[in-house]
Image 1: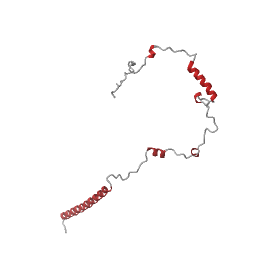
Image 2: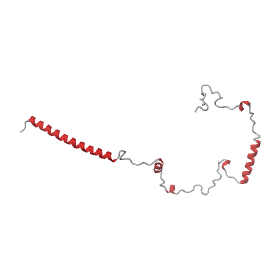
Image 3: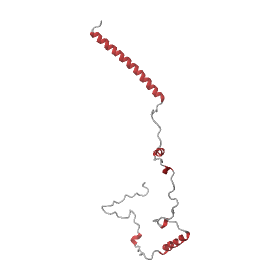
Image 4: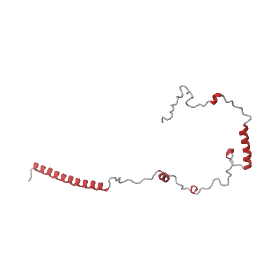
Length: 154
């Protein structure tokens, strides 16, 4: 029989041998796995799935027509006069050719003669000078003189 000291040494030796065998086996399996994975593809992304581009995604996620009234829509303007509205401007109403000629004559007369009831505006020399950002003085404390770009510097 073994002495207690020898038995402890024997147990430690057995544990060390078993651990070294386990490490050796695990090392071989890892190498074979890494070798196998690298031989498949160098750019493999594994679980990547193709995504829809923006328009297809928007069309896929848009609200669908489930109601019968949405699927088969009726014309809301059916049997309605859409040429004249109650509060529409005269430019947007459809008129006959005779009415058009009358309105055209009035417009041409106004263009030629103007409105006799309106006052005439006198044009002064100051009105004849064009005001650009270069020759306009900025309001002090409010506006800054704009940085003007010289021709050919850009």
